[in-house]
Image (cartoon, rainbow, N blue to C red; front, side, top):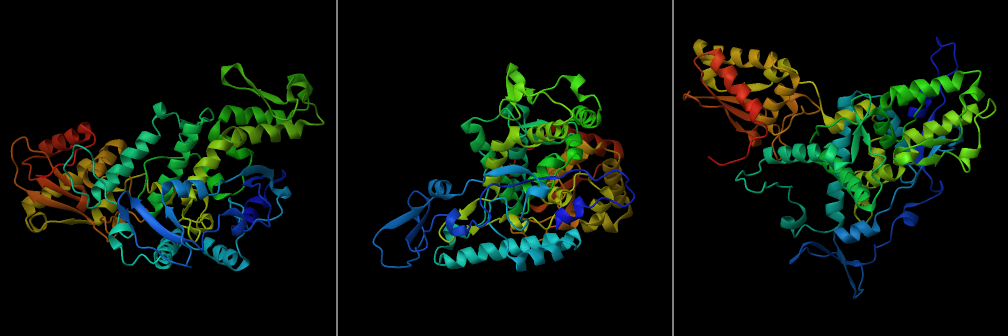
Length: 489
């Protein structure tokens, strides 16, 4: 469905449409789930969560042997995604996932219909599908007798802090973990010209690939937990996660100078004068050949188009192929290998375009103070008394005049996250997934006192400052303090 839209040139364009390419599975099209995943349907299964804690089992036959399902087993049994970069006209079938499995015609039609719906409808459909998928997994594993093992929600405990996770700690954990993943010192992601991040081409050792797989799991888990993360991937990377077409234009998001150079090579009439060959120099003085014996093949008018294609393939895909495969393996991993249940099947995301996928993963970057104010609940004293209601005017006016990064820090202080949920402020929830609107409670002013946050409940206790200047000074102190420890009072 996406391929048809992107490959049709607008009628007002005189020049031919750009050539499109697809990152897709290299496995045969007739590959089945049985061929991809180990068969464990006839085994007697114990689900072990931690040492000494064994879930009840599901007996499918009288086999005496038992199989322990743990993280190591899941890692060994998970399929590894194998990808290739192809011109779109060379790809025969579009109805397949990045893992090589086929999407049925019936499901394909459903996804086509959903793709034409508003984003809100698609997001609700995604959450409904995920919930049904997880509930189905719990049912067939027959773990109803052990709700304390597999049916509990994730709870976060920060070492050295006394906070109890009712939602705020989880949001804070996602924020801190994501920030650590994208730290330059971690070496996993690098910034591009579009201020987005892409996979680091230099991070190819085994430990780095394991980390990329863990990042994929983080992204999948954040979708399941309805958490939004403070990062911004570059457009081509979002497209490759979805398996949607790429073109030369996508190089603009990666490297504007390289895009300009490739466009010149593509259109020049004197390409021989550039003295190019089918190789590219990389860091450390090494040379990567774009084709076998590429250093000995000069670029001429006869192979000019092929050179541009090979360079585009290298820059967008080849140099990050291993990293991308590891990340996607984690993102679409089969978490319950007994019945091959995908907690986040890749085709669940096909209904979204790359901008919508960013919204699902990253939420709303810009904080709309008017939306924040509209969906805020205030204590009665702040509504009923004119003198105190002025404090609320000060509060919103101070936020409105803050720089965006500072406003995000106030949001993190109050909710544990620097990002607004997909649905806006009306979508704020607690740890149980139930709507929990942002609220402000008035408390007595004590000289030198700062606002108190209850991020698990999306609440700020705001001292009744006698002047706007004192309130602004207090909020700026909160911004300057950075992440706040969670401590019981």
